[in-house]
Amino acid sequence: MHGRRLRATVVGLLALALAACGSPTSNSPESPTAATRTVQHAMGTTEIIGTPQRVVVLDTGELDSVLALGVTPIGAVAADANGGLQSYLADRTRDVQVVGTIGEPNLEAIAALRPDLILSNKARHEALYPALSRIAPTVFAEKVGVAWRENLELAGTALGRSEQAARVLADYRSKATETGRRFGDPAAVTVSMVRFNPGTVRLYGRGSFIGTVLADAGFARPPAQQVDKTFVEISPEQIAQSDADLLFYAAFGDGGRSGQEQVVGGPLWPKVPAVAAGRAHEVSDDLWYLGIGPIAADLVLDEIADHAPQSDQAKPAAGSAPINQ
Image (cartoon, rainbow, N blue to C red; front, side, top):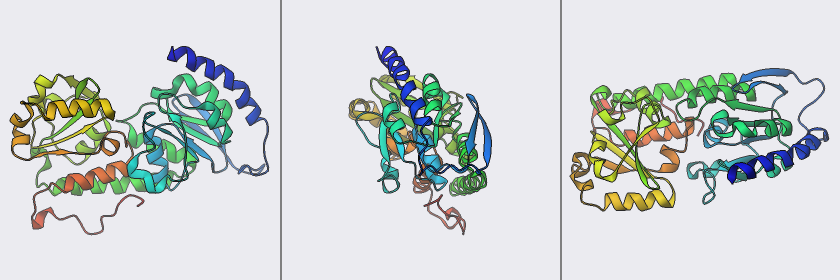
């Protein structure tokens, strides 16, 4: 049903998109003398004229990335129909119009904003690319999550802010290293990531956004999470596999929160050694799992550092600065 509805929407909006593209207005940021750049991306190449001023982003990672580069988009999608944009970005997104959800972007609302650049990724929206590219120049990353650093660089290229993207990544890598050092030898510290989703428990591996942040800080992972994929699913009865020196857990949506309550309130959770020792910490799903960008990574590192041993050797290096905050 959803596939048929999506295809109908795409076909119905092609005419609208073509009309929008064929009717330039006087407030368009483009000019006949503006430089044209060709950007290579997951769907081919896209020509971008001048510096984009009206940007629409269709995933949480793209929203985080453009804000880190100093660009406030005019439109963005919510993670799901029950929520708005990421709460940790609330101060930066007050004037950003929500144009649907990641699963179902509202193409009519996007076209009405008359964007001059659309950013998303092939993993989420490959089927929508023809319609989107008729609304405005559209640039797609290949993947989500594990590729967030490369996606930031691509956003920087599309926005004409490659140098700024490089600086943001350099600052992030420096902070990740310093965060790891606060734990002495981070390679000797295992960190576990647990996410409660509707009907399932997920242990997040190296092939995820949070997996890359932990790796960049030098932390080890417990055996069940030493995998290159995004996550592995376990049953509530297998929750002992989540044990580590540090355990962080979150829930996605109402269904995930219900599952979390059942597991955390059950008899097996208190028996996990990390839980029994007070080393299990609930965190924001919005930030740790949905952020998928440099601002989220920066804030996650701050929260991890809060659990470092308190010693003179565990102090952050002088000059450490948050990413574009």
